[in-house]
Structure formats: C-alpha cells, structure tokens
Amino acid sequence: GKLNGNPLETSMVWSHKLRGFREEFSEGYDSMDNPLDYGLGHEVLNRLTFDLKDEVVSTATKFQHVDIFDVMEVPFRSYAFYQKSIARADDEITDSYEYCHPELFKPDRVLYLGGVLQSSFLGDAPYHEALVHPVMIAHHNPRRVAIIGGGEGATLREVLKHNTVEEVVMIDIDEELISLAKEHLKEWNDCSDLIDSNVQSCFDHPKASIYFCDAMKWFIDRFNEKRNDEMKFDVIIMDALDPNDAVDIVDELYTNTTFLQSLYNGLHDDGAFIVQLGEAPRLKSPPDEYGSFQNRARVIHTLESLGMETMHPYAEGHSGFFAPWTYLGAFRDGSMRSTWYRNPTEVDLQIEQRIFKTKSGSNPLRYFDGTSMQNYQIPPKSFEAIQCLIRPVECSVSNTESTRRVYSPFYERRFSYAKSARSNQASYNLDDVNASDEELMKITDRSGKMDFRRKSYSSSLLFSRGLIGDVSNGPNTKAVVTRKVATSV
View 1 (cartoon, rainbow, N blue to C red):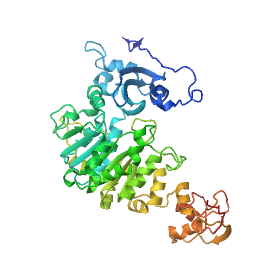
View 2: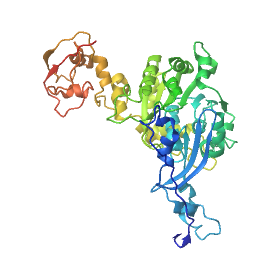
View 3: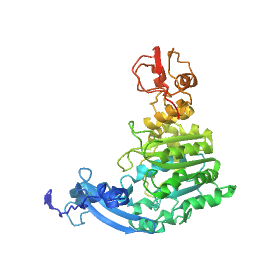
View 4: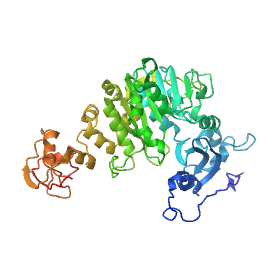
C-alpha cells in the first residue's frame, strides 16, 4: 500500500487462542493462575484490534513471569503514521509532521507481571506522578524516602526530581526484573535529563540505595519493636501488587499488622505513607469490606488504628489501565491537612521551587501540576461517602460538602446491630437540621436494625447525613419511620 504516494511496509496481526474448556470443566482450574487465560491473554495475546503487536521479552525470573510488548491499538495509534515517524533520512517524507515528532506516534510499551498489567509507556507519567508528587509536595521537607516495589524504576525517577531528597532506599525482591527494566524499559528509569544527574539510569543515581530482598522482612527487622530514629523516613511509598491480586503475598502486604506497624514506626513524627490501592470503586460497587477489595478496606482501617491522623484517598483516570486508579496518602501529623488543601497557585509555586529543572529545558513533570492536585483533593464519590462517614473532619476541612453521602450497608450494620429483638413504630420530627448525627443515629440504633426494604420513610435529612441514602423530598419533611428489628444471633 501507499500513503501520500509513499510505499508502506506490510504488518502482520496475530492472535493467540486457548483451545478446549477449562473453568468448570477442569477440577481445580483457576484462570487467574494462567496468564494466557487472564489479563495478558485477554488484553494482548487474544486481541486482533492492534495494528502492531510485537513481543519485546517474555521470560520467567525467580519470582514471577515478565512479559513486555509493543502494541498499537486502532484507533488510538496508526501503524502508517508510525512508519512515517521512523522514515529513513533519504526518504521523501522526512519533512512530515510525524517525522518531526516521532514521540507522538511510537507504540505503547506494556509491562505484565504474572499476566497482570503493571505499567505502560502512555500511562507512565499519569500513574507515577500521581503516586509520588501529591503527598511529597504536601510534605514540607522530604529528605529520606523509601520505596517498596517499583521495579521498573519510574517511582524512583519521580522521587529523585525533588531537590530536598538526600537518600532514596528502594527495596525490591526481584533483581532480575530491575535488570530487564534497565534494558527494555529505559524511559521508566531515565534520569539523564535531570540537571543534578550525571547518570543514565536512576538505578545508578548516587542518592539511590537499592536492596534486593523481602521488603516486609527489611522493615520488620529494623522498625518492629525498637526505635531507630537515624534510619527513619520522611516518606514511605508502597508501589507493590494490587490489593485484589490473587497472589498469596498480597494479603500479607495489606493486612499484616506487624508489617504495617513497622511502616508506621519507620516514619518520622511528620512522616507520610503512600500506597496504590488498585481499581477505583464504582458507585454501584459493594463496600470494599464485602467485595474483592477487602484488603483495601483493611489497610485503611489498620492505618487509622495505628495513629495516622489524616488520610486522603484520590484517583487518577489516565494511568493506562482499564479503569481509574486509586491511591492513599496518609500523614502521621494532622497539620498536613493545610498543605494538602493548598490552592493550585500555591502548588504550582511549590513545584517551581521544589522540582529539579531539566538539561533540555523541557518540563520535568509531564502530567502533575496545581490543577491536577486540586482534582486529587476531592476523592471519588464512592470513596468520599465512606471517608465522610468515618472521619467527617476530612470533609469539613476540604471543599467537599459533608452532606454528599451515599448509603453504605457496612456502616449501617456497624451502627445498627442490637442484641434484643422487638418491633415498634415511632414518629420523629426529622426537619431539625441542627440535630447531630448521633441523635439521628438513635433512630436506627435504639433497639435494632432498620428494615431498609420498607418505603414508609422519606426524610432528606437522614439521607443527606449518609445514614440512609438519597431522596428527592424537600428539607422540611416530617417522616414516620417504621422499623423492623431482626433477631441477632
């Protein structure tokens, strides 16, 4: 074929399909244990919607299987335009826009670990800048930072952009993965353009100390039941497996109280903890406590019980995954709320003062700025509901209206279980907007659980406080609340 009179090379599109029946036909078979029948298989190998699909590397390390592919998916990328961007110097199309800006037309490079998508070239900046900079910019002086995981090196790259950082300790158990990243994912760990850097790879930066070992053991050995002030960190970042991944180690990472306690102990009194929490919940998703993201709920509750004074969940929708991705910033010092909620101009000024310039003169941050930080200050509605129910102070400090709640059965059950069983019917004047949540909660908690299947109540005040749900009635409603009490066993 030709494009504008120029001959084009042909490309072959292939697909890998699994034969036969597996799930429900083979005893003990789990598709999540087979990368060809899970993320990698469905999202890359089986697909015929790519103009380009090249295997860069597929190998097994001691700990996991690593797959890296170059892909171009129609209509987001065009193989014809890509060919023009890499034309030979003697071709007639070297004056084309594609040839002058090849970075805009290159394939997307994707990294899969154990068949699960971990990172992509196009989603690199949104994901890793959202992971690192919101909390680190909110911290007044992060000098010593720890990274758990982050084998491709992008998290390390973003941390090293802060001119306050004196040392970064990165702990990843898979040394072979880091070697593969240095060879095949160079953009992820490229520090050559930073004005203070004399190295190509961030892994070789003099401020970086890389440990190839079990991060859980590393922290527990140093910070479990002893004070070690000289080794404490200002920021700890956990860029590990997703909380819902079907891997044994995941439960330990997100629910092991001893490990989480060691992370808390490893922070200075004004320290901060950052963790990625997987796919964002949808408005119709069940509460995390009952769904596949129980580990996400557990780690949030555990961090709160350990003493984190302020916690901020936020989401980023351009991370290169198939859904918005969530993060959590947790601070030991509650005064950090004021820096978290700075306006966009203040954040941009802090970025200008904090982030190293580049040798090329390009912007050192490709995605994060004061405007994106403003978006992170208001969590997704589903997170906001739970966040405001369990810690209203976070909603009162931010610009988020504390009355924007949705019904959560987990918290309804927490507040409404009772040991005695009786049925009664009572009338309440619910138009008193000055009534406290505790007073209104007595309606559902006095002697048992409200039967939410009944439709005989319609108070907007209860709903707006997040104690029931959402209604369209006006604020001056007097409701008759009928309660049915279930026997608790």
